[in-house]
Every structure is written in structure tokens, then in C-alpha cells.
Amino acid sequence: MLNQQPHLDRVFHALADPARRAMLERLGRGPAPVTELARPLPMSLPAAMQHLSVLEEAGLVRTEKIGRVRTCAIDPRALSRAEQWINARRIEWERRLDRLGDYLETLQSPKETDDDPE
Amino acid sequence: MLNQQPHLDRVFHALADPARRAMLERLGRGPAPVTELARPLPMSLPAAMQHLSVLEEAGLVRTEKIGRVRTCAIDPRALSRAEQWINARRIEWERRLDRLGDYLETLQSPKETDDDPE
DNA sequence: CTGATACTAAAGCACTTGCTTTACCAATTG
DNA sequence: CAATTGGTAAAGCAAGTGCTTTAGTATCAG
Image (cartoon, rainbow over all chains, first blue to last red; front, side, top):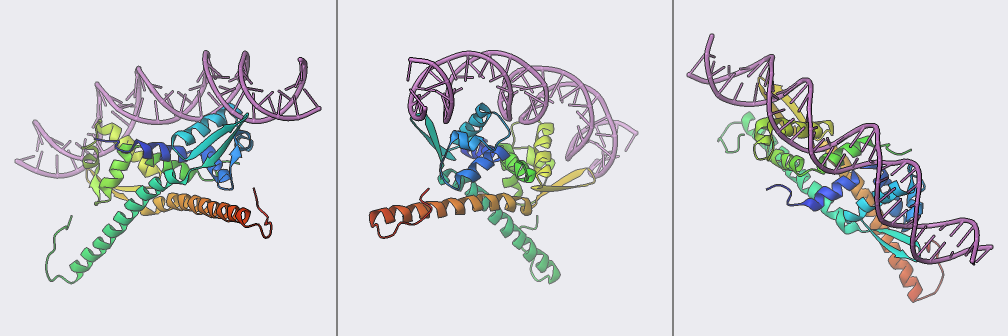
């Protein structure tokens, strides 16, 4: 019943780590090889590689190895799904808050009782 | 150097679990007591409580206990920070893709060479 | 009062994460 | 060729997660 969206799990989990967000922010300025992504991070290269593979499995990053250099680039499509989920929630919540406001107003000037009083 | 935004860590981590997203979706339709949030989930009540406290520590949910019932409600502000981060990345990436497009066009019709060839 | 309801606290445990180190291969450089 | 560079594979380990069960406490209903 749960988890119809394992993709969202992976994307949000990938975004929940500062090292991975730093990688994405760097990649926002253009593609980069693995070593360059790893350099600013306070960890070993294999550790950075593991973060990178989390980003890749979430679909946020695509990589291609040419010669001995693996070049990494962002894939914006994965992020848009996460954005859509957040957006849907926010719209829903704002609408509800509006209806709550309406309801409170009907309490102020009681003409007819409406439904959805919670 | 990393982790200037532990708040983002917590929000994205909270969103990375389907049980917690289900709770948020339910709360989008209005406040609810703990038991109602837990009922559809395939786990014990204490387990659901632990998920709830993750949401609360991320600032996504506020709760108030009246009598023996703890009522939970969403707090949209926490989510907007996450949305802003995603938005910033997407705008950055789209701008970069546009510039890449421009660059490719200048290659097609070479009049003047611009900077930022990456 | 008695019993049921709604939560909460705590301990325990299998499993997963997030690194590390070591060792290694393949591509390039001199 | 030998040495260096860029990346990978694998093992190991401390710490954290995600549940469970058990055992409560406080509140409400009758």
C-alpha cells in the first residue's frame, strides 16, 4: 500500500546529505570529473564515489567514462518530480488554510451552516 | 565547511520515507490525532510515533496535546525552504543549459567568439 | 470506582550507513 | 618501458535506523 514512489524515496534521500548537495551545486556550474567533485569534501575518494553513486541511482546525475576520466553531469528531470510533490503539498495546504479562513469567517457572520467543519 | 544547512538535511531526510510522506499527505486534508495518522501504516503505534517525531524535528509538523489526544498539523514554512533550494538548483541548471545552447549556436554561425566556453 | 483509550518511555535487536584502509586496474605521461 | 593519475572493488567497522515488545502514565466514559 505504501511506497508507490520508491523514486521519490531515493531522490529525497539523496538530497538529505550536505556532501551530495555540494556535488549538485558544483555540477550546476557545469560537468566535472569525479576527482574534482571529491576534492572539496572532507573525506576519502572512495567515500565521495559512494555519494556519487547515490546521486546516480536517484537519477539526479548521469556519468560517462571516457578514457580513465568519468565525467559527471546533472539530470534535471529527476529533481522536477520531487519539486512537483512538494508543490502539490503546498498548494493543498494553502487551499486548506484558505478554507479554514472562510470557515472562521462564516462563524463570524452565521447565515447558513456549511459542511466540512472538521 | 559543509553543512551550513542542517535544517535542509532534516527536511529532506524526513521526506525520504513513504510512511512520513503519507502522514504529510493525510495532514494536508486537515489536522489529525496520532492514532489516525498511524492507523493506515503497516507498523506499530510506537513506530509511527517515531516517524512523527522526525517530522516534528524537521519543523514540518507541529503538535499540541490536549487532554490525552495529541493533535498534529502541518507547518508549511519548513517545506518552503526545501522548495527554494530545489528551485534555485533548477533555475541554475536551466540557465546553464540555455547558455550551452547559445554556445552551440555560436559554433554554428561563427561571428565572434564569446567567453565562458567551459 | 473499573475499564478502555491515547499515547509515551525504554530496552533490545537486525539491518543499514558512512566512512575507512588496502589493494588493484586501466589510461596517460615522460 | 616505468611512474603517475583517475577511478574502482572489497573488506571491515563504529554508529545509526527502524522497527519490535513490554511496560507504563494520564485521561475519559460509564
